[in-house]
Length: 575
Ligand code: TEU
Image (tube, rainbow, N blue to C red; front, side, top):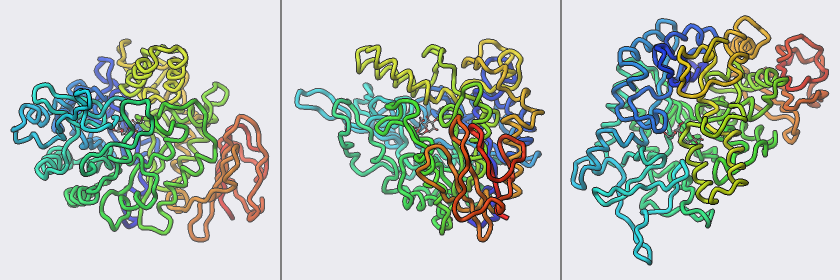
């Protein structure tokens, strides 16, 4: 892709419809609510919005279970509301991308309803059906040992037709059979062309590397002998026909000036990622790698972890995995730290203690806005929203992933209090719910999100303090700092959007510093990841008087070499 592509310097603001803005007082966000905030989004310096699934859905996995690609979830609004949103973006010079969830549908999608109706239905083969296996005792077993992403078996038995169907996520999310060309055709026309014709500018492509399953659906290696089902992501990610499917999909989109960003979990191998994002390969424009958001998670399963069991060098190297994609290649990359699947970055990677959370939010903003690639900001990240309060009961967590995990631990340990306490700690640290409670707009009831006290998720106890109105006119706020940095990113795009990232002092566990370079130009970023002051030691190759301070998260201009305040970040350019 040439550097002229509009999406390279794009700043994408991600919106989660359920939690962004409720325009009709039913306690749930909606499309008109999003439309009412477009001027705010634009005022940040964002150029594109990404709307999480707006499609009709029974909402078992909050919209990632789509029952009709061609209609809108009624509580969110109508097709006309979506059209108004698309037009409202375009009239402001904003682009809009939507979620493309085509690895699976909802079990209520008419395709699956037909598929499950009988073994001879013409759509039977649109999903992945297999006969049972029987063990030595004659007990019925699923076709293989795969565990789904939500802690249960990846197979569900269908009584009516006496076969199992595959679902890599919930049982209510059956996987589509991409091997059938008719299925692919239907997907392209219903999920892709339908929306391109209505003017969307591209897609965030959900679980894009899972469409092609391995031949024969073999068992996963037994990593945890005590578990009934095994993590199988290395088997079903990046399967044999991915290149073929993505070429085909790319050709469907080619007549439109789209941007595609694919979600690419379980792919640490740089050369595999490059096959997806090399411009010459014509597959995807960019992907979300998982290295950064996986830092501190359990290796076998996400929640198999304790808070802060990671070290700063882990984060530096994870960032290198995505930043290095553009070095010496025709590929493109992304910078992001939050989305609707991740806990809040301030709580995960810095400190949400009252005295440090503003400094932390700004320091992480400096990190995000100085990394190369297309930049993604998740709603609320720009005001430094933090994880849900620790004293909220487990019932406040609504997401199927955390709920299933908690139930799984309860069953596996027979309600052992220690195991349950550990599970709750992990959920308090990493649950997807932390990204899904309502956005806080002002200090009015429900944080200005809704006039209805019965919001679908509980409003954060700190909504009166951490909200947009409180920061709107304050240049020293997290919001003010994001705005400043998005301008700076544009001014210094050559270094900040396109430059090469180079870690300095990789093993340093307290300070994160790196160069951004492009030709002879150089910028230096230094970030204090601790609550203590640190004296900044400069790399040998540079002297203090060569450094020109562009910005400090503490605002006041300071001499080049001095002490970093707690969670302070600075950006210098080399004179
Ligand atoms: O997530 C895909 C994915 O890989 C998840 O397992 C992700 O790693 C997990 O949510 C992290 O905790 C996508 C969507 O972003 C997610 O919201 C959906 O639940 C999922 O696909 C199924 O569509």
